[in-house]
Length: 334
Image 1 (cartoon, one colour):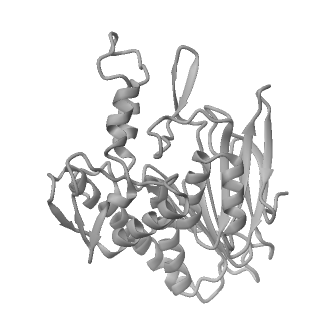
Image 2: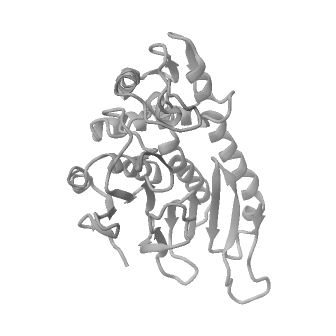
Image 3: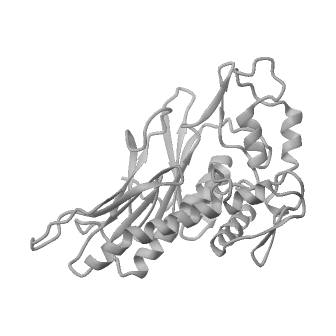
């Protein structure tokens, strides 16, 4: 759905031009501060936006059986698939963040994710989820490792049976950046792009101020934007948030996050409720936010402080169930 909201015949535009729709299992939202010289571009934009998002889905959606990533995951050992340039860039960037985070970010963790999603393989009651055995966790962990990815000149090789990749923790950020680049290349100078909570902005908002972006209170069952914990301002920057509070498994009163530590193959049991990262682009902010959920706050803060252009904001759930926050030195919180 595409909605154009602007004041025709007024001396000054008062409303944003908004493009909204569905993608990647979530919603996207683009808000543009219009001017009188962009009408023809606005007519073309919806078709191009849709084309960009459809292309990303065809490359990287694990929900499409004929996508490039699904073809790889289904291939036998030593088979090869020639992937698109965008998908190649996402994989290479994922490998980079795997190295920077010492394996806390790893797109090959899908075998472990599927194990925890399914639960114990031979449990007595199939309808009652139960955590997998330690032995099954170890077996699946043997299939994980970003350093085992074989990619050469866009040829992605299935290194061994059972190897799979999943770029869901970085693809939304990539999608935001692709839409951002399209908007910027076509002369839009004041806008915000958002996909499922991942955001990137250019210029000022319609009030001539930096874009104000909310950070959700990490309450299980809450909807995005329903209850804000804090806000921050973005100007020519990106922001991504990752948390373990919306999706989790439970057994015998113990909660297990849907986020799996690629280094151990185990579901997270952490007091970190969510991490928000700001940075120069959204693909990197997205990957780093995921990794910081896996790392301890101390490890994560040390890493963030060592990276130029990045800041982070942790929301922690203390022993009393209350939320506390920790911010890196440059994080601006209102």
